[in-house]
Every structure is written in C-alpha cells, then in structure tokens.
Length: 488
Ligand SMILES: Cc1cc2nc3c(=O)[nH]c(=O)nc-3n(C[C@H](O)[C@H](O)[C@H](O)COP(=O)(O)OP(=O)(O)OC[C@H]3O[C@@H](n4cnc5c(N)ncnc54)[C@H](O)[C@@H]3O)c2cc1C
Image 1 (cartoon, rainbow, N blue to C red):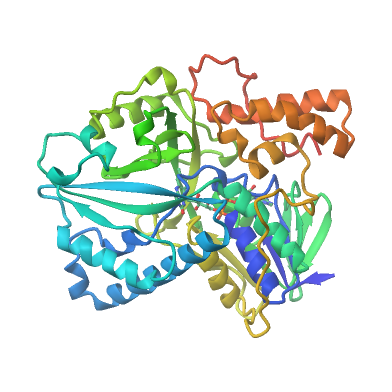
Image 2 (cartoon, rainbow, N blue to C red):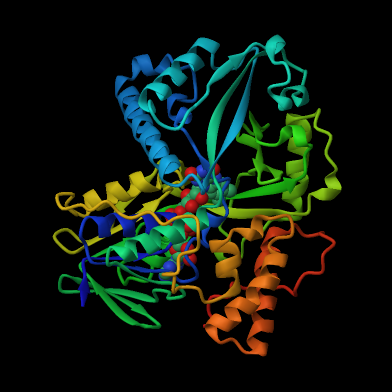
C-alpha cells in the first residue's frame, strides 16, 4: 500500500502530526527507531509555556510600537498558545499539573510592573474561559507567606515586584506521546516502534523508506526526528542543508521543604538564560543548563561539571535556600533540536518547517525546534502545508488515565515503567515498579527467566541516564547503550 504520509520520529511532534493527519482522513504511518517519546521529548523541563515569553521581545515592550508586524505576529502566537493550553488542560488533566510560578523583578530590570500587567491582560483575554492564570503582582512588603521562594532571593538589588501566576507542567510528556499514537491508531493510522528508517529514496512521485521490517511507500514524508533530523535527512541520496543545531540542557533534582511544594521560581542566570527551580512530583529540579553541543543524542546524560555549575548557579540565584547537596545525585540531560542559522552558524529559537522535496515532486518536510507545548499547533501547520484538508476532519478520541488495553507496542520493561507509567521520575527511578512490573510483562509477552534478567539489567542501564557521575550507586558498566536493537 502507498500511504498518504509517512512520519519519521515518534516524539511528541511525530505523534501529534500522526493524530492530526489521521483526523483529517489521511492514511498515515509513523516509524520510530526506539520507543515513542524516548528522544528529546523525555528530557525537557516539561513546561507548557503560557505564551508570556512571546510578549517579551527581549528589550522594553515599547519596541512593539516601532514594529507593528512583530506585535501582530506575537499576538497571533499568544492567541494560539492560550487556546492550545486551554484545550490540553481540559482534555488531559491527568497529564498536566498546575504549578505556582514566581518571577522576581528587581530595580533596573527591563520590564515595568504595568507592562507585565498589560501582558497578562492580553494572556487573560486570549485564554478566557479556560485554564486559569491566577496572575498577581505583589509588592515585596506584601508577600506574606504566599510565596515561599521570596525569602531565598538574593538581597544585592532592591526587589521591586514579585509576580506570581499558574503555569502548567507536563507530567510526563512521554505518556502524552504514547496516548496520541494510540488515538491516531483508533482513527485508522499505523505506528511501528523499534523500527528505524535506514534509507530514503524517491521513485516517480513516491517516497520509499527502508526499515528492518520492510520498505514503506508514501506520497509525502515528514522528518520529525528532533536532534537526529539531519542524520535522517542524510539517509536520502541528495545533499540537504544543515537544519538542526543542538544545545545541551541538564537538570538536577533535589528535595526541598514541604512549604515549597507546588511552588516554582524563575530567574535569569548569570549567562542570561532562564534558571528554573520547579516542583517535580514531591521534589524540585533546577536548571536547565545551556551549552552548544554536537554530541550523539542517543547517549547524552548529565555530566559532573554540569552538576557543579548548576549548584553554583543555585547559590547565586537562591542564596537563601538551605539544601543538602548530598541529595542531588539525580538529574537528566537532553539536546534541544534548535534551528541552525547559516549566517551566524548559531542555534536559533524559531520553529522552522523545512521543505526539502524537489519542486513539483512529492512533499518532504522536516521540523526544527518544535517545542512540547506547541505540538498541536505544529501538527496543524504541517498538515496544512502538506495540503491535508480539514473539510472531513473527525474529532480524535482522547484516551484516559489508565494504560490502554489497545497498546500493542510494549516490547521492553522501560516502555511500561518509563514511557507509560512515568515511574522512572520517582525518587527510586522506578526500581520498585520495575521489580513488580517485570513478572506481569513476562506473563503477557512470554519472557523466559533469562529474558527477565536481561530486561532488568537493561532497565538499570537505561535509568543510569538519570544519575550524575559520582553518584554512590553502583552503575552498570559504560559505555551506555540504548536498548533499541539488541532485544527485538
Ligand atoms: C533541556 C531541555 C529543556 C526543554 N524544555 C522545554 C520546555 O520546558 N517546554 C517545551 O515546550 N519544550 C522544551 N524543550 C524542547 C522539547 O523537549 C523538544 O523541542 C521536543 O521534545 C522535540 O520533540 P520532537 O518530537 O520534535 O523530537 P524528539 O522527541 O527528539 O523525537 C524524535 C524521534 O525521532 C526518532 N528517530 C531518530 N532517528 C530515527 C530514524 N532513523 N528512524 C525512526 N525514528 C528515528 C528518535 O528516536 C526520537 O524518538 C526542552 C528541551 C530540552 C533538551
């Protein structure tokens, strides 16, 4: 059969496009080399940004007055972001957690109190009737006990205001990815995990994708391989310009007092990057770092130097925080699939949908810097670009909090404990869940005793990605491998 669309990469963007294209009536197949949601989607800071950053042009907001086009674009993006936020929170409350976000404003900072009030009025307008923002701007002498992070802020500059609002966090985006794949399948689409694309060629007006499970033919291809996007483009004979420019981001997990539960703070680090201290289940994480990187996305993991840098940043940003640094061995790292900017050779933060097919030939698109939060918007935009009509669009189903009995894609222990249950983000990195889950899986999938041992061993290796070097735990031997080939 010739599909209308073949998607390479089952991260959040691939899964969202699969769902949207199937809803529009296209015959779709998605091919993922490991498990769904196991790439950059599993390594982020998980924020569903409300859109505030689009109203902050980097300098005073009066810059919008001299660039009305920029303002129009920003307003359109904010409108779409707030709509997407409302829809997600309403559809999947079990996967999105509200956090109370604090943002301090010091004497001499770029943005004035009234400008921030105005920005939130815009956000409130576009988000009316949906997930609340609960925005408040506090004067520092009126904070009371409402914002526990305020006492931890540095005293070197006078604090002018503290703003607080409700932001949402994906709890955990891997599961949303799996769910969207299953929902697309209910609409007739197909998906294969542990099925890497190994070659791409064009014959007539049809694309042919080679995989270990045979060739797949499609009228259009979407390369949504995140940080691997250039590697996948390189599977085709024709040369393509560089598209992706990755930066590394690392996070460090720690235990804070009960009074901080549900509260997060965002400040700007010494390098002018956003620095978060966010609640994460019953703990907090700090980060992310941001450094240029050309490393292999398959093996990225936290580094000892990053731990030291994050702790130094934490001391500067929140000197009043009394943390036990002995409890900070856990973390995670990932690569942001940012857009390569050829003029500067730098990583740019704009989302780009690249059109790679020859003029007049079958369509071939690729994506860089498609964020978690914008996945539905991106899926819409790519579907429009591929000419998939909305005329007969069916509203896709939404699967609930229970693990779906229709999920036939589970191959390994980590597929359940990590991607479907999210238990690797618990304090024990899912060890307890793995021990109880493995017997159930062995029964369902007919695993032998040797296979059970192998799965447990691989699970331990996979979750070693959450530990900074120097952790006391005995880790499996390096080099680490992703279990995507050996245990098919
Ligand atoms: C440190 C950090 C912090 C971040 N914070 C946020 C945040 O707070 N909010 C936010 O919205 N975004 C955030 N992001 C960005 C966000 O995580 C990514 O932009 C997003 O997850 C990209 O999703 P994707 O589906 O495009 O790519 P991925 O999730 O990387 O998926 C690509 C998939 O392609 C597969 N693949 C690769 N090669 C092949 C092949 N040959 N055949 C088949 N499949 C293949 C991979 O296995 C992978 O699963 C952050 C990212 C990082 C790293």
